[in-house]
Amino acid sequence: MKLAHPWPLRALVEDLRQGRTTPEAASERALARIAETEAGLRAWVEQAPLENLRADAAGPLGGVPLGVKDIIDLAGLPTRCGSALRAEAAPADADAAILTAWRSAGAAPLGKTVTTEFAYFAPGPTRNPAAPGHTPGGSSSGSAAAVASGQVPLALGSQTAGSVTRPASFCGVASLVMSHGRFPVTGVTGLSPGLDSHGVFAASAADLALAWSALTGEPDAWTAVDRRPPRILVWAADALDVVEAPMRNAVASAAKLLREAGATVEPFPDERLMAELTAAHPVVMAYEAAEERAAELAVAERLSAPLARLLRTGAETSAVEYDAARATITRGAVRVAELLDSFDFVLGPAAPGAAPRGLDATGDPALSRGWQALGLPAIALPGFTDPAGLPLGLQVAGRPGGETDLLGQACWVERSFHDRH
Image (tube, rainbow, N blue to C red; front, top):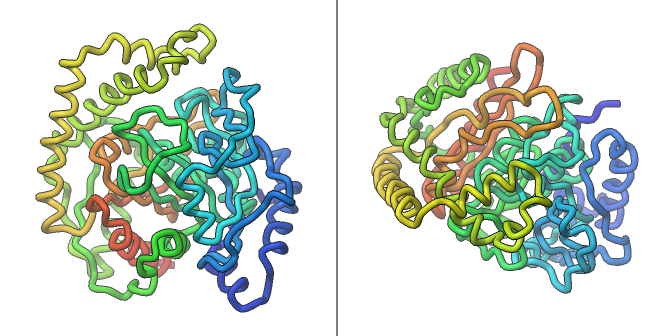
């Protein structure tokens, strides 16, 4: 059985609009695919009862099935956050604000997808559909796997460090991390208020563009795919010393392809800046997590070792250290804004390499920490593989609040990747 077989959103929405299928039939297809693959994937915590499925079918998405990461409230189902501490959680009384927005766009939540414990490092049971025996990444592991396997065409995640971008890269799908603060986080069990951002997975950048247009009412960026060739800064991340040779080769190959397609391609000029931002990020994350998850810190002995260590580290971090990290991020934001005045986006690795073998860890988020600290929108793009055939994703990061423009650029990049074949 082929597990990695994404379900294109754009094709489904066109079928819904033309009356070639119905929302009910789309949900039935999703449930059938889940029944076929779930034993090998374990991407879901719980499905919603069929009678509870509802969407605004008049919305632009027309009733497409949606997976919801289990830190996001879905009315009628508990939010367990991948933690034994929430095993007996009562069902949520109302949807999270972000889920209300997706329902209005025409998405039909099918149920809750697996998350790592409180969206940190302790893995859930999910397998990688593109590479059985390898991690799907985290913390949005269930959502990434559900999209990569074709269980649903769209699924929600969240990112505090690399929780959307990394699973997309490992599982071979596309993802969008929204600008920090673009939508409210009411009804989401967060980890770090200064860093938490919403995310979404789909098969391709073209599908993400459609989903974003439906969610926001902004133009469908895919229709502008024939725009002028972009101006690109390529970030090799050499200063972080974590990028593996196959990923370095993928970034170099992408830069060459995009230059041949007409793009202006220059190296990112400030590797030291990104190293500083990458170092500042975990200071902010730990400090804020200790406050945000104070109730869990009080029972740290009942948590996984990684989460307990994060919260204890945050509790020991001084306000002076936190303020210094925030100041580094503020200075970095000014510098990156200056660079993006002259360039459209930054292209770089989405993860150090392919998904590591084993299911006891979720991989290194270092390649996303700097961009997440800045609160920038970021898109993961599939299209490359390592010598063993495992997915390698690249990411593009753009201006705050510039999701529509960035999606248009990502569609141009995606088409350039496809044209090489």
